[in-house]
Amino acid sequence: MSAQMDQLIAQFENFQAKLRQAEARFAGVGDMQERIAQVETTVTSPDGNVTVVAGAGGTVTGLRLAPSAVRLGSDRLAEVIMATLRQAVGGAVRQQAGIVDDAFGDAWRSAQPHRASSRATGCSPRCSAPPWGPNR
Image (cartoon, rainbow, N blue to C red; front, side, top):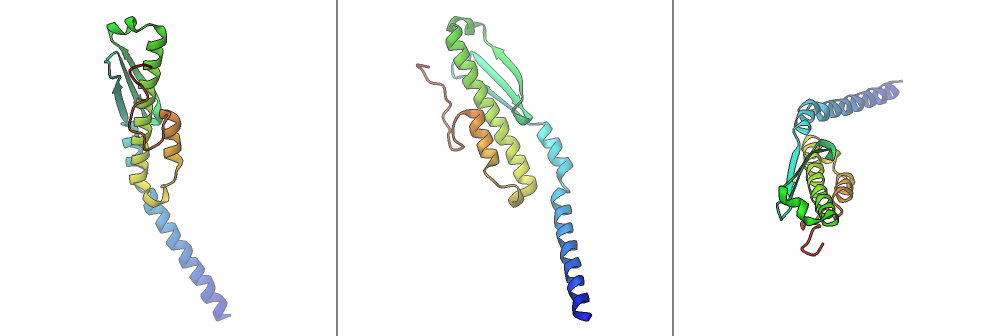
């Protein structure tokens, strides 16, 4: 009976230790949520015609067109808007992923934020060049 009791006590202590670890990990959730709410990335196209602001979750919160943007033509303007949008959304997604990573560390690290960023920006996580170019 004593061996069984020792085993039960050990299992209970292990459970308590895991519970303390989980509590410690989630202690900073409120701060993390506040930081995520402040996420904002602003990107302006190289020609200065388009500016996009993206916030938490990659939500587009602003779009500004310079008066000269209308001279680009509808197809080119659409391309510049989409390229700028991808960069802004990707930046916001990466910023948010960094905040979550800071809060949860090793428990959070996975390829998920990078995949989301790749989908949002249209390039790999290591891609630093914007997808716009002079002939696009």
